[in-house]
Length: 357
Image (cartoon, rainbow, N blue to C red; front, side):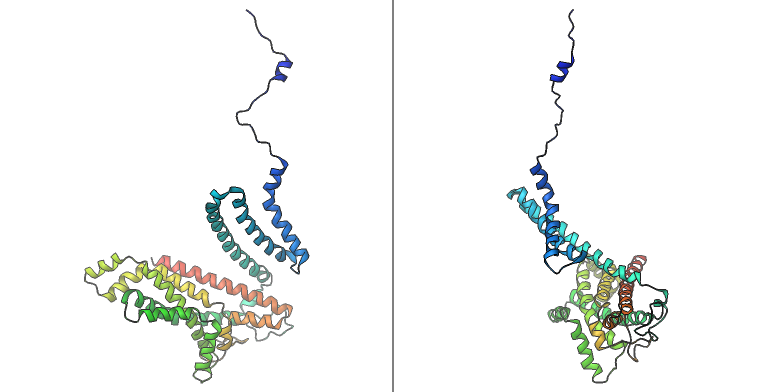
């Protein structure tokens, strides 16, 4: 019986063939693969060097738009005609999400960093009656502006929300002859610039001495801006309530009024809370109408019917107008406080809506 022996030469001459052989990348393939990441950086750097755009923001903005263009064009260029439609849709969805969330994060970060850096406890427990141009940050505060914002926005909400919801109910439930006119009027009000609302209250009420510069004047101006937002959102929410609920309530002997208040409105409660939140967000940061109506001041005024009343948007505007380092720092704190105040209101509205559901 013969046996075969293997020597080192046989082992050297044998060629192992793996089950899944790896692909050897050529240098050109590596360059093409890295091109979508390198090109935006190079183009953005060239723009920073060749234009007045400087700093991190000056680099980030062109880099962002060039990256978007590369992400959109590159898969189409590499994938061919069969993949263009699908890739365009996927890319559009991804980019829209990226731009939306990226803009929100950038906005919050741009306000949070300078605002948080200059926060002092006294800013929230003192007003600005003793503040001058040379006053340090650890003296004086913006309590008067915080309280004024809460009062003005609160009164505007109490005025606009009932009328907005009633207008939505008239369009979706009553469906009377004036529905086209009501819808047209609401849509027209949605396009009114904020300063026009302030000018209207100034010309109609302040010049005629019906009211003076006060919190109620500012609240009336803001309610004009809040009303169409609440009405349009409430209309869309009420349309989502199934007609079967209305028919069931009416078949059980309920009147239209009882059906609306005991069936339709409870079913649309969470959506109506969203309408209120959107309305508050629409007017919370408005400055122009308040300059013409509530004006402002540096002392605490809790009476909305007497005397000018400060607000956070007016406070930010006035401090930025003065322009000293301390005043600009106070303006950033005011902007951060306004952002946090609106966020707290959103959270409370959602919490109350869940507890009552």
